[in-house]
Length: 278
Ligand code: C2E
Ligand code: MG
Ligand code: MG
Ligand code: MG
Figure (cartoon, rainbow, N blue to C red):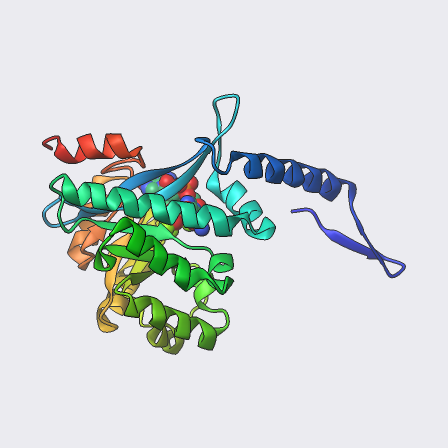
């Protein structure tokens, strides 16, 4: 990461940061142009019930396709969308698209299917967020109890009182809340309890660890226990092999997503994946 250096009272950018900033500005302009075109689109990764091995929902994930046929990874462009403020418009589009597809899924025989949508901290700070959410629910007709918003653990730690108030208002619409990448931040347990989130998502790093570690001492196990004690549902992220799926099930983790089951895919692919026998 490029560093901001201070000399003689003046802040200046190191040469490496100058390059980085030009690159980021370039990406920001490209991203602005991509909004509203087909270059930004949503893919869906199934979430699986570990007992029945049936898909019960999906997480919506944003993709940005660029001219040369490649993709810019979300971990690279989401931060740019955040600091440019573009995430407010982009995030609303993702939510509308995910809700539209949720209704389509329900109508094609997948009643009760759930949809999880990632929401950035910047969106949460937007005073119009709640109105936007209500408008999208009304316009699309998506049933709120089948929609979940994912917030990262690090967001969850900021501005506790304002956040708790917003989460309560969101929950009063019927929409549920999941804490994403759980275990990577520094939540205080009392704060976690006050958030009254519905679900914890065990971060992929702790799922990866399962292969190597012996049972009884894993962070994944602690997260499952914590979720249970707080009456929260649990989803494990990034399950890549059968061993991890077995252990998670034995630990009492009810749901999982990961390459073992399915990669994120376009909505039409998801539709046919859901109706093909496994
Ligand atoms: P996330 O919400 O934690 O999403 C899970 C990430 O893990 C996704 O990466 C998914 O493709 C990846 N993944 C799923 N299963 C596996 C697996 O078995 N192995 C491995 N190695 N990876 C797996 P992706 O799609 O690149 O997204 C990265 C992050 O970007 C997301 O992490 C989320 O924080 C953010 N993001 C994506 N879409 C959106 C969006 O619409 N809005 C916002 N605010 N953030 C988004
Ligand atoms: Mg997520
Ligand atoms: Mg995650
Ligand atoms: Mg993540």
